[in-house]
Length: 92
Image (tube, rainbow, N blue to C red; front, side):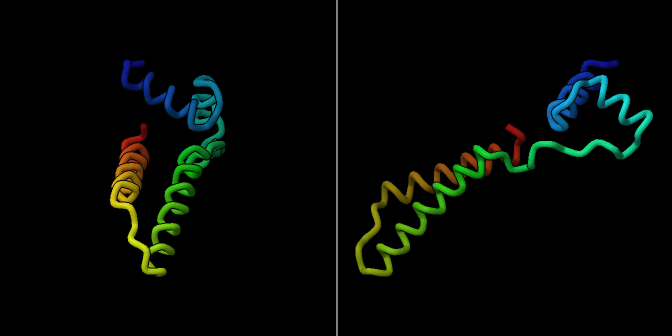
């Protein structure tokens, strides 16, 4: 097994929350039987998205009521969203 194949096996084992041996056995003897245990969007990312959404809702309420939104808070939300998106797209 090459180093790249071993790395891919480790990623698959983590994704399916099982051992590398079980991944190989499932692929050889039980094709298509593995099911991912973790959701694609894990709980931490979901929590961050929820917090960002709450911040956006608060800013929208302020804007609708005529109160100016804090530019620093808007910048922070944008940075948080970009960081989270980068993590999700580049597989952390």
